Amino acid sequence: MLKLTPREREVVRLLAAGLTYAQMAQALGISLQTVCSHIKNLYRKLEVHNAPAAVSRAFVNGGVHENG
Image 1 (spheres, rainbow, N blue to C red):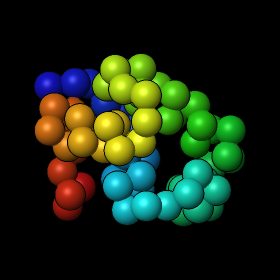
Image 2 (tube, one colour):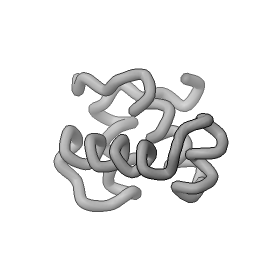
Image 3 (cartoon, helix red, strand yellow):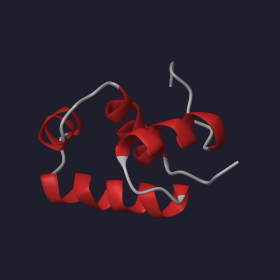
Image 4 (cartoon, rainbow, N blue to C red):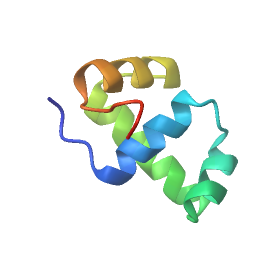
């Protein structure tokens, strides 16, 4: 299982829900730049290049569950 931080797991769940980066920033109370940093780290850890692949890999191999 991949070692995603709790915040990275939150971000990937929001990606799966279809939120934009700006919507994620607002929902999490963080800056857009911070969301972008989390996304960049997710892509690196999950070894993917786009959001659908990140969501898929996170749910299958990253220990992310739909209910939290």
